Image (tube, rainbow, N blue to C red):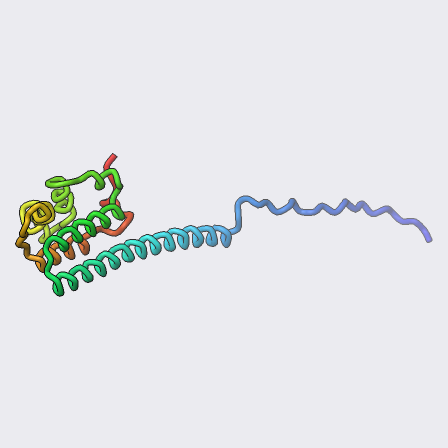
Length: 170
């Protein structure tokens, strides 16, 4: 057998390894979906917490209302409503803004968070004044149902937890 001309074959060249950057479009879609899912869950949990605080406050207010209907003790009602409103405020607002408020400043703070038709200084110039005057009177004459209604309006007017309305200005 004769040897013929040698074939001029080249070495096999493998393609370059696949680069990890930029990722394929599917990975971009997965990343986007993950981010959207994270923020959706976060928003849902915040809304759930805000709702839980508001529902608990309204339940406690309903218990106070029932107790006042059974035993109309004005002093007890005013003290309990003051404590309830203070606890709600400490849950919603920075402790620094709420904890030291007393008297007229406390009522002005409560008025500031009633908006629209509900406003008109209902705490500082209206029925809500009994929160700061009744505890110091021997016999306090109050409109218990009206005060309970005012507090219910205030609780339902609260903005959702985490909203910009709750943040302290810098």
